[in-house]
Length: 103
Image 1 (cartoon, rainbow, N blue to C red):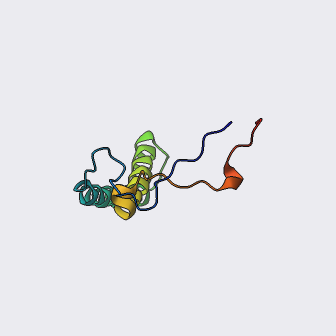
Image 2: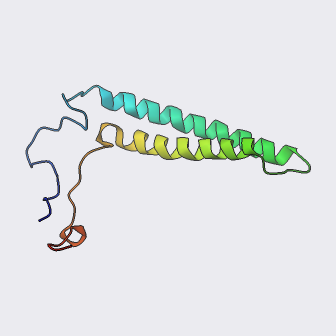
Image 3: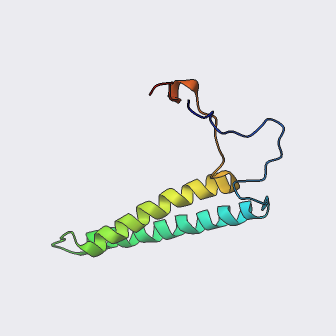
């Protein structure tokens, strides 16, 4: 028998994803998300100039690390800036995606 999906009761006070209801953490997470987006912009700017200034450009580990840093910062930054304290909220799972008995 599979457990029921976890979701918040209707009418329950939202305390955020953190125990103890740290209500002041939402703006902090959004600001950190914006900072990560700025880091991503800087990383992509550096990568662009690294590629377009060299006449004979070869792929290097440094270029790959800059690209990976930009991608990770952009992904996490966008999620944190948009969702803030709701980043780790539980969601209701449709019955279609729940396991069946005997699986």
